[in-house]
Length: 154
Image (tube, rainbow, N blue to C red; front, side, top):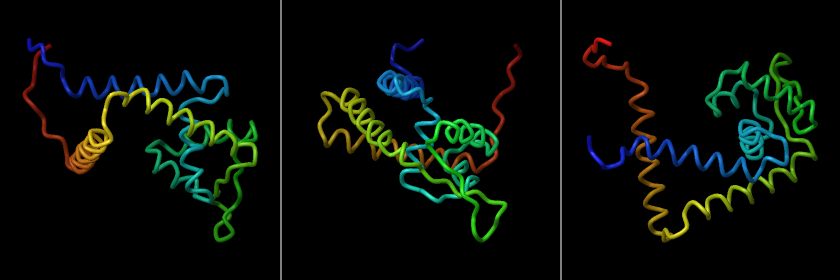
């Protein structure tokens, strides 16, 4: 077995630890990571259709509906009927959510600063470009059917 770390495992660990650290900073607000993500997307896509937000978040519409129900009950978002189609709900942040957006951005910045300590701005930019390329490659690959590998008897 090789002693070289597996890049897939390291990427997974880094993503998990970024989420964990952000959640540590944000725990006092009583919002889940998924709810923070909804606030983040709504802060730049206010008035979006509920199903389009589910697509952006890459979650099932019913999962988003449950998140939104909880967030609406706490007064952070509101659903408004689409004037063009009353069956469709448009999503908006309430005045109570706006201060949370700033807290979230500050916590995200602090978390990134911790994660990228010791990396130059150029190294950070190169890492971002590399990760974007990897993401693009995987998004394209996911459009293709998977090819079965060798069958293994377990």
